Amino acid sequence: MEVKENPVLIIPGVLFWDSLYGGMKEELSGYLPAGRVAVAPLSLSDWIGFPPSPERSTNRVMRVIDQSLAGLERKFPGEQVTLVAHSGGGTVAMVYLLERPFQGDRYEVGGRVGKLVTLGTPFHTSERYARLKTDFIERHLTPEFFMRHPVVSVVSNKYRGNMQGSFVEKLCYQFYRSVDGNGDTEGDGIVPAGSCFLEGAENVVVPDAEHLPTPHTRWYGTKEGVRQWIEWL
Image (tube, rainbow, N blue to C red; front, side, top):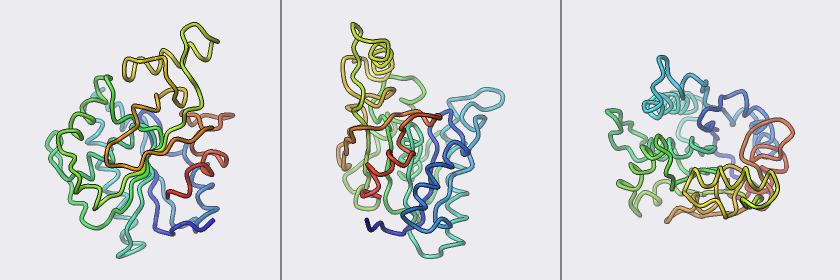
């Protein structure tokens, strides 16, 4: 399969850190040169803060994204970077790309970034800190945005939540309900698929991927997971 060889920056999800994405980087390196794939060097403290200030996590993570893009720009001058963002990292990437002041911080993206591919990113949620981002996106997102930055929102519908079902189905029900209030739906085990549908984006549902980047799971960053969305890179 032919894949565009734009430089790629992987953005970890909320409460996840860069080393968890080494496997995804390796898998992507099977489709384009390894030196063209980077992971934003995020730590758990970037998401939590010290002292704890999760409401400022987006600002801290946007700073790391901007620094990482500057590094890729020096290595690959004039080339547009594709962002591949997992979970809540996808909404941080959207806030960054909107180029609007967010809690006092605003970044000039210019032509450095092309496409944004999100993996299990909920754009509709009732979770308190996530809504700081999703409400901001809803206020400022316009159809013109997608002309500058095409967005592909990928999510799996592998698991259905069911409060009367198996242990796994009950867990999924609780996770899905905490995101958008409806547990009786399909998703990737943590995020309901419907919450990832974004008007103006290309919304892609894949059949067999899990949300959490943990060992012994078939999550979006494994060989089997990447194969399901690599054509949209």
